[in-house]
Length: 246
Image (tube, rainbow, N blue to C red; front, top):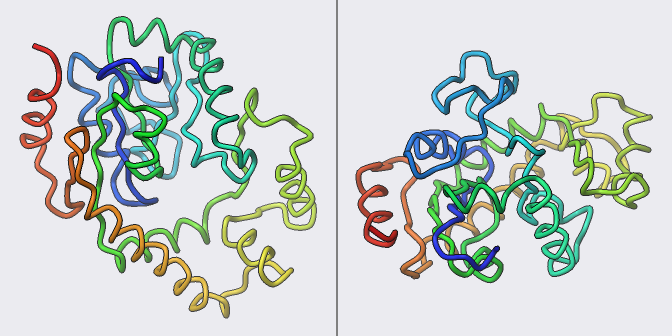
């Protein structure tokens, strides 16, 4: 199912660069499946009652379960990408993904680079958000300092997973364990302290600067490069119409 034509629509972006906001707008198109639920909002534009801190965020909830994430979300738990995507196919089918794409298209938000997505979903459509490295760094820094590092991947990551066990050990020592705490512990064997902020910022910026360069040079007819600060939905709609069958 990962090789089926034009059924997987990806918003590829860095953390905090409006990927989920864009996805909600595109999910209003009749050809798109929306993960309708009280948690996500019955309709894509229903964000007032969303429980996430990021009101635009949504999970891939279906009538049968939750569609699995792309590998970037679980790579620390399951580094072997090929092995994970074999599991992905099974979980996608189990959660009703095959039923959905027989009728509509599924929209995914991901931090995987377009080239990596095309390896695993060669016939997908990808909207590649090109970000400002400095702005993206500050957004990610805020998220990392204030967001929990433990995400529930029930049914995907086994309870005895080595990295999950590592996080649980840290959480016993610091209940409100954040992404920044894990970053600090992996490097300094201590939890995050504000005095580490500049070092953390520099490391984030290096990643954001590098990914910005790679994103800008993507050249593939299945990838549309858009600037985070000047998104044109009419351009996106025109591009999709030029590729999708009439």
